[in-house]
Amino acid sequence: MTQNLDTPQLVWSSGLTQRSNSPVSKLVKEWQLISQRQKEVDVVNSWNLPGKKVTNLDQVLVRAGFNTARDDSQGDSYLWQLVKRASEEELAARIVLQRILPPLVAIARRRGQIIDGGIDAAIAEVLPTAWTVIRQYPWHRRPNKVASNLVLDSEYFAFVQANRAKKVKMFAVEPNLLGELVAEPETSEFAPYVSLESLIKTAISQGINPRHVAILRAVASGDTAAVIAKQYGIAERTARAWRAAAISELRARTQCVV
Image (cartoon, rainbow, N blue to C red; front, side, top):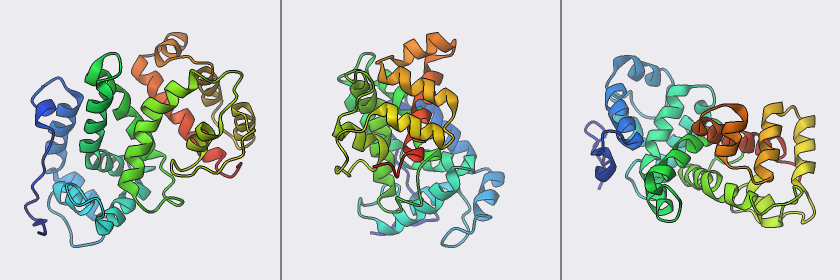
């Protein structure tokens, strides 16, 4: 059954939206304001996205595949158009974040059962990581399964990569970890003797942010976001965002190494 784009029915996480202090609740409330604001609607219509002009940004979410089938290729193609703009257009990134919010909440619920701090800690990890993933998504290389890629990347960088980094010594990276670090998660054919330090040197030659180099080496040494935050005198949330940005830039700078 096709949804009416003029009156989209958006379903949010009732358990979290009922908690006024929840970041998810705040995102939904903020969205309800900006989605109806004429300024934002006019900006989106100026992008000449597929379909007729919208009167509410909820319509954009539905066209981008919100609450539709997993194999919604039309919605995924529309989402790709948004992601292309997300690196430069903050509003586009905000729309994409809202589009993948339900699966991000599902990740936080699942991860919250096995990490210290529960679901609140998981949300605090995955939301800023997702924002960085969206802003730095390599849309020119990964035009398909965009929603799935965004969600998988967000979970990987927020939870998997940090845990694996604690087990890495002397910047040595096992093949599977290397594969997930520098290429698409589904790719598994990588050279077995590449070290993180060699990747960092390559990234330096490609102009990687010097601060990101320091963050990457700290992460590889097993430093947590809390340790990094203390070292730089910043909030732990900021440290997590720095970490995600450093990993994303490393991937971008070394995508052709292996």
